[in-house]
Image (cartoon, rainbow, N blue to C red):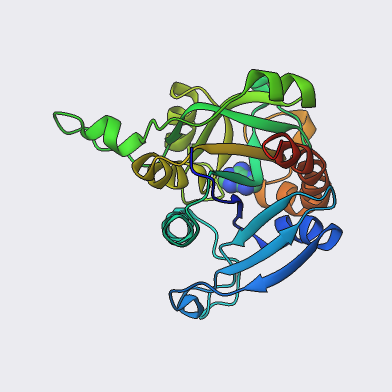
Length: 246
Ligand code: ADE
């Protein structure tokens, strides 16, 4: 394994903010002109004293919102690996969960292999179905999961926050416990570049119908529960970083 740094990759500024605020970090520049994409990179130490690089997909230069989704995530991963040769990437973020799989708001999942896409469907002969759905490996250490009391589950990515009936059909077929918007793209790059990838995802909303969602839409649940889910995420993330820094 490379001796390079541990990189923590986020999609949204507010997901990374508590980790950055609790530690000692400096903004750094990328060697490629990163202002065109809005990537935000910090280097420093977490509250527990572990050296990491924190990379955020950042603020889209035109639309001035967080650059969520698979395109920015994959591009950022490519740039990070090219510049830093990380020994591991931890992709941390928020996600939707499934009541049918025991998911609750604030649960933190350690992703299991394979990580998939639920909205890339190409039923052509040959390997097109598998290629489209991704099915990439991720690092999942049972000992770590048990030590931190994390949930285990398959993470599925797509480029929409909502969930159509067709998406739901494929999420169920793929056995997803976690629905989010970046991991499968990051895994595509990590597999190609032989960098181990850990997925840590905290639940903001319940995707399948359940009284816990109180009739709220995905968007309403997301906004209501976001701060709580981010606090749960960061509490676990600091320990995951400590684990992989020993
Ligand atoms: N991030 C948080 N909740 C999500 C959901 N339901 N789908 C995709 N990404 C999310």
